[in-house]
Length: 294
Image (cartoon, rainbow, N blue to C red; front, top):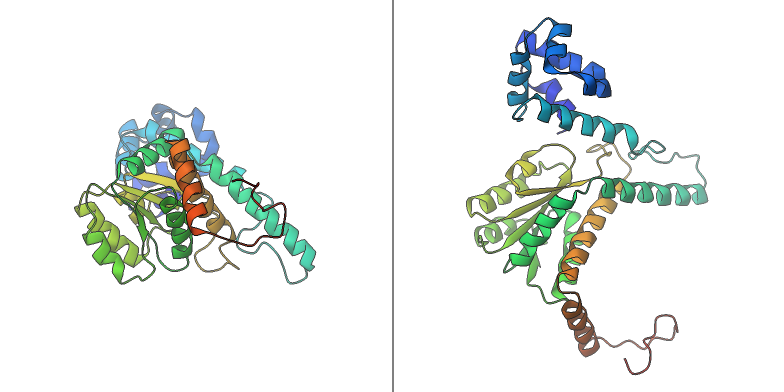
């Protein structure tokens, strides 16, 4: 849930509601306001802002203000040229559609990159690097991306698993320990089966990386790290998950690449040797062919 949505749905006292409405109306202008200024403008007291911050899960108003401004900036400055839910109309030519979808995916990639923070990414890599096994939990069509990610990890020598049958999520979560690392993927962060499995992981003290939408949700509240994906699609009223799927794919590729980097030449040699020993293709295309002797 976006912070602004949470501010609109949280139950506040009458004086708190006045202040919350003031903040929502000011948007990015709130940056220049202190607790004293807001209290003066709303005929309340600075202590009201402290109570509001606590109700929204923040330690104080400065922390709330930063999160609010970050969200306002994100929503205002990304995907200005496209509607991620209905990017094209019935009147578009097929080449226009090809161009629109390409540009939409490019925007999704740039948007996702803007949401990545160094410390969060570094913590994720360290969690994966220390783990005896990396387990990826996802449901529905996201299992395909999970399988590709696991395929990559296994081909550089990591023990990794994912589960394409939803019924096995609970059993696998139960058998996962604090020595492992779990990556849980959900756009909404509210998928019932995934949340139930993640709650089991949490009870087992498993380090959890959540890949989910911007804002707080049930999944991110359970996770140790939250990697944010581009967040512009509605739950149902969209043609397809063009941007969210592209974003998830990028985040998984970044995790794989950064993990590859931790012991670059070892991982590269392992992958090449494994491919040479297990793969053979009679390739005619000179671009794809390996050089002789390799």
